[in-house]
Length: 628
Image 1: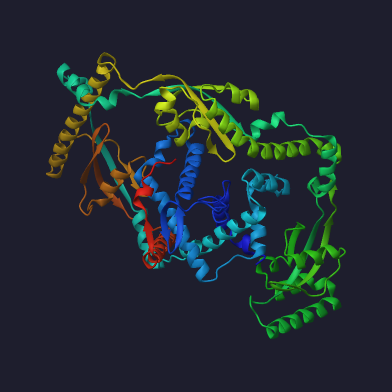
Image 2: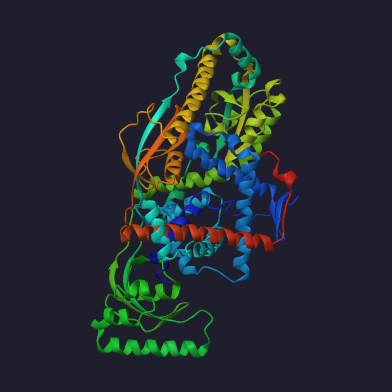
């Protein structure tokens, strides 16, 4: 198991993507929380997916989209029926895979859990695991280490199933060669475009007016509001926190290991493996074999690397002479770690039993610990203590904040003064979204456009827009939706209609020319310079053009195809076919690609089978509810 991460880099990358903060698809601690089951969106073989879990999944997806799209993010993207169903289907698939894992007793070892945790970039500083970053990240997500371990173990277990199936697709060498030849084939293609010319089109004024009158939604100026708002978060409370010097010293003395590099050891080992669940007799034989290897080492200590290559069951380190590199406490399983940190450099241990078998350990290097002084660590400790205090105070302040903006609903000033917050301004906010991330939340937007906010100018309730962040806003100004005046848009309409007519005319002319070419009359068409094109190297041709050109029977060239385009109509002439024999590297690449496609289809079929065998019930009414 020591080589699991080394030999499964792609799996680890996928896993790290899964557990990047926020960690899990529907909330890292959704299984630990005791939540109301009054409303369920779905039930999977007796396991319920609550409305709260589903809403959290939608919001997490919104956060991901917001991070990718920035100002272009539209919160309504996830409120379409298709997207809501897609999110729910993902949650159902996750549940089905976990149920399958539980039935088949699939799990992940503690060692793999530790190695994966230490590989997560969110927990690293300069490429190395940082316990401090780990603690802060979990604290920010309001999680305990046990909650994180349980969720990560779950994700890794499910990933084992999906990766095993997705990577198991196979395509024969013959099929791959045939497909590679088709992909590599080149065709000599030249093109002629019938260009749309809107300058030749005159659109009558009454046609422009009729289009305007028939399509009012296209010329609507959306309803919008200008608001003032407050953001209460643990981060916003940091500035008001004070830390006593005595607390700093006490924290430093209690957490010395955090303020410096812990002692690291480099070791090599020879692992005599024992299968999980092995009986006493198997363990006895493994121990006897380990004792035999140890006897050889006692007689010839310099043969450690050679014996590791021959005898060790840890294939990842055996090829390196048993070398495991440097590690600190917490990175290895406990029995191995305890033994390695007892040994002196150059010493070889007696057989050490762990869940994986019997290890013979040789310590080959020691890096002493390096600790920061109190003064060096003071800024870091003060910020940590302030964050802890702010987090505790936020939990206490949340209810008071919510009550205050509700009870004194005609102004945000009382809440701003009490919690020492700045009242911020924003404008141009529509029902579809806001350019200010703090306000771009479906629930908050719905509250801002309610009658109570618009007509009565009352504060919205305090809405949790992200974990540990509350926002209350108040409408300062409201602009009702309106129709752009005809005079402002008539020129644009005329250009649009002229372009549409010109494109339609060009396409009609192009289709007629294509018909004449296929009859043998090429007198009216002048093609551009030919170029050799393949499916892998389209030389700028669109996918539709490639599909048409390579779909032609080119046994007797020239042959012709036509494709609609935004500019009009393009005719493609195929004048020559060049068969190319792909090299071995290309064939292997194609075989791998087809294998992955086959594996993906197998995984989909596997999920479909799980779903067919399970009892899955979906509450359509709950699914169609808007995110609250």
